[in-house]
Amino acid sequence: MSLTEFNLIDHFITQRTPIRQDVILGIGDDCALLAVPPGYELAVSMDTLVAGVHFAHDTAAYDVGYKALAVNLSDLAAMGAEPAWVTLAMTLPTINEDWLEGFCAGFFALSKQFNVQVIGGDTTCGPLSITIQIHGLIPAGKAIRRDGAQPGDLIYVTGNLGTAGLALQLGAAAPPEISRYLLRPYPRIKEGLALRDIASSAIDISDGLAADLNHILNRSHVGAKINVEQLPMLNELAVHTSLLHAKQLALSAGDDYELCFTVPPEKITCLQQTLPKNSYHAIGVINQSAILTLQNADGTDFLLTSLGYQHF
Ligand code: ADP
Ligand code: MG
Image 1 (cartoon, rainbow, N blue to C red):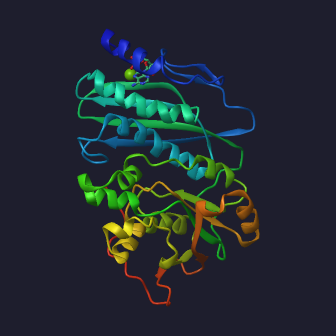
Image 2: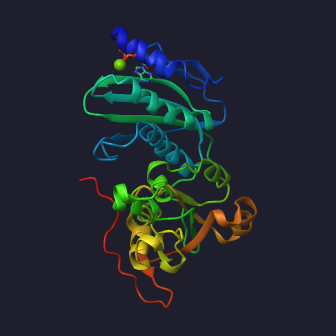
Image 3: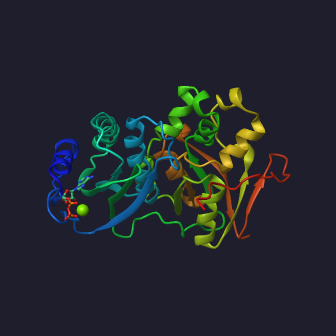
């Protein structure tokens, strides 16, 4: 490792990361050493953001840093895991200190909020790309998995859908109240933790509701019926697009990072007592059909024109 690389990590990462008591050894050795508390399981996930693929080349460094951590936190949220540690792999075209300042401001704003310590990483030279591996803690057996949905369970989503997708379509024309949903998705950690003993399954919506709900259906060997009229959408969407297109976006656009989860009928009262009333919405029900049916309010089928983001 070159001196500049060492200085860079020390200045930008080691000195800024929150410090946790459960980190025995952090940045600086060949491996980090971590203490998983007795009775807990480790939840591990990784996400990569590539410039020009996951974010536009002219995206502000702050937003890249924020989002790289936010999308990883979102995976922990979907499992009901409490955030703990991350490793950070940065591939940078050059050492640009202004860019790194911005990146760290966004990254550490979120890392401090959720008490996540950077415990190591890797630094390489090449086209801009950020990979984060995140580690969270869950009491043994309490993780909310994709394979637990049962016929009769109600389907819910947090927040609103389709806003990030609209921001992507509008590009530079997107007003800040729309673009912030694409640039700064807020990880639903609080909701994920609250749902540990309530939800039968959960997933975070990164590739569009229809595609991501299908993962729950496949893993749980069930089907679902969604009432498209019940999809929660921001009122501002109507200013920029038709209601029909807004529904298409809500179902198929990625990047919302809201949670989609299922709740057995006997836990619905508990759900209502746990999450604030307007923070989530019922959108449908799990059934035995093995397929996803989209319905309008009058019972006719809703035709989806695109099914989520595909990488290849
Ligand atoms: P090695 O050669 O053993 O893989 P490195 O020289 O790459 O180790 O890194 C030295 C230390 O700095 C390690 O503890 C590593 O985890 C840490 N590190 C390297 N890059 C980063 C980064 N981008 N963010 C955080 N820690 C980093
Ligand atoms: Mg290395």
